[in-house]
Length: 109
Image 1 (cartoon, helix red, strand yellow):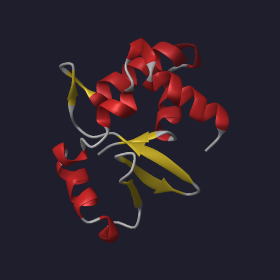
Image 2: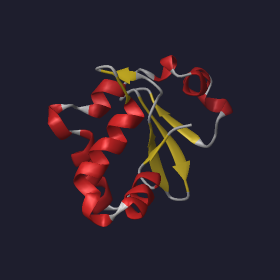
Image 3: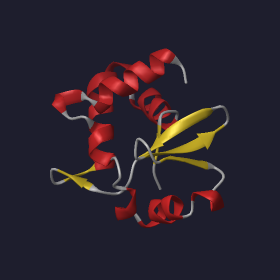
Image 4: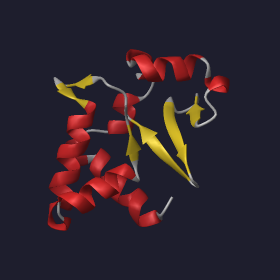
């Protein structure tokens, strides 16, 4: 992935002292879709399950998008946190560019 995009995603995921990747590690079994993927990764060629890190990625073109499970984190949905933090950091780019950025970095169903 593009270094700038990866750095920006890292900033979004670690805003407010929350290590978002650590929070979602090994939580994919709490999401109905991702549970099927991590239980049978060989049946889902468009995903990459990293058992060492406990993180799941969607393969898209030559990139990997971090999969965000439908879980609650401190009473808020993980997706809501990502959108909120991205908006805080990228607000000056406008809603369209923020959405484009998120679609190139993270994925959920």
